[in-house]
Length: 266
Length: 260
Image (cartoon, rainbow over all chains, first blue to last red):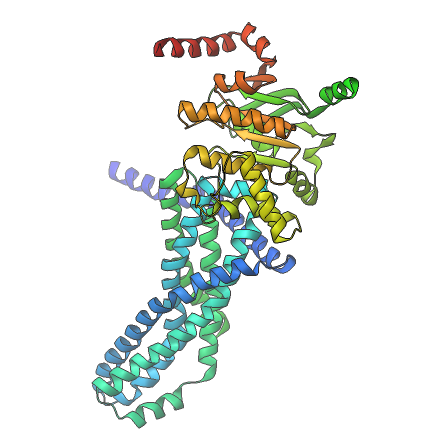
C-alpha cells in the first residue's frame, strides 16, 4: 500500500514538474524572441555599423578557417573510409564519392560548421558580452545614448549570418577533397568512376540546401550567444554559467532546428 | 550680477517626488522626495543596499520606477520617448563604480567614443578635445594605453574624462572612492572639487565615504530604508538628530579612533 502511494506521488510530481516550470520557460522564450526581434528590427531600420560588422566577420569567419579546414578534412576522410569499407561488402564502393558529397553538402557541412562556430565564436560572444554586462560596460553604452543592442548584438548576428555560408562552402569543398583522398588514394577506387558517380548523384540544390540551413544556424547561434551574454549576472561565475549555457543551448537548438528545417523545407 | 548668480543657485536641476521602486517583495525605494540645485555638488549617503544605486539607475533610465516622478531641468523624464531619452542622456555624464571603460579599446578610443557617436566633428578637433579633457582630469600621454594597463585611480580619471566629453549638464558618480586606497581616495576628492570648479554643472555623487562628502558636498542627503531622512548642507548633516545618521557618524568616528 505504501509503495503504491509512493509511486502515485512520484508520478504526480513527474506530471506536475513541467507544469510548474512551464510559465518560467514561456517567459524565457518570450524574452528571447523579443530580443531576436529587436536585433533584426535594428538591422533593418538603422544604419549598419560596418566597422563593427567587418571586425566580427573577421573574428567569426576568417579566424575560423583553420578549424573548419581541419574538421572538414577529417570528416570527409572518415565518411569515405566508413562508406568505402561498408559498401565494399556488396561491391558498391564506387558510390563512396557520391555518398560523401551528398551527406556533406546536405547535412554534415552546415551542422558541423555551426557546432564548431558555436564552440569557437559563440562561446566568445557570450563570455565577452557577459563580462561587459557584469562590469557595467553595457550600461555605460546606454548612458552614453548608444543602444547596446544596435552596437553589440546586431553586428554580431549580421556577421554570423554572412559568414556561415562561406564557412559551410569551405567545409563542402575541403571535406570533398578529404573524401577523394581516402576513396581514391587509400581505398584504391578508380578515379574516373569515383568522379562520375559524384557527378551523377550530386545536385546543386543539395549544396543550396546546406548553405540555406547555415544562414539560419548563423542567426540562431549568434543570437542565443548574445542573449546569454546580455543576461549574465554575478561576476566571473555568472559569466562562466552563461558561456556554458550559450554553447549547450546553441548546439541543441542547431540540431533540433536542423531536423525541422529539413522536414519542412526539403 | 549677484542677483543673477543667486537665481541660478536657487534653480532646481533635479526634482524627485514620491519615488517608489520594488524588486519582487523587496520595497527598495519607499517614496523619495528631494530637490537638487543647479551647479551644486550633492552627495547621497546611505548604508549598503539602501537603494542609492537603484536611484541613480532610475535617474538615467536604466531602471524604471514603479511610481512617482523625476523632473530634470523642467522636463519630466518618465514621459520621454526613445528619442527624447537619447537626447537627455547626451546631457548626462555617468562615472561608474569601476569606471566601466570598454576594455577592448584604448584610452583615446574610450574617451572619444561619445564624440564619434554623437558629434559630427573632424578628427583633429576630436583629438584636441580628448587631449584637453584628459589634461583636465590630470592625465597626459596615456591615449594609447589599454584600461587593463591603468591603476584603479587612473581608470576613474579616464572614466570622468569620458563622462565630461560631451559637456553634460549633470554628472553622476556611482561610489567614486569604493575600492581605492586612502591616498587615491583623497586625490579623487580633489579631482571632483577641481573638476567642479572648471565645469560648474550639477554633480550628484553616491557614496558612503564621509571624508569625501565633507570635502566636496554643498548638499548632503541621507537615505535610510528607501526614504530621505536628512537633507541639508554638511553642517546640518553633522548636527542631525536622526538616529540612523547619528549611528552612521558614530560608526565612522569609532572607525577613526580605532585607527589612531
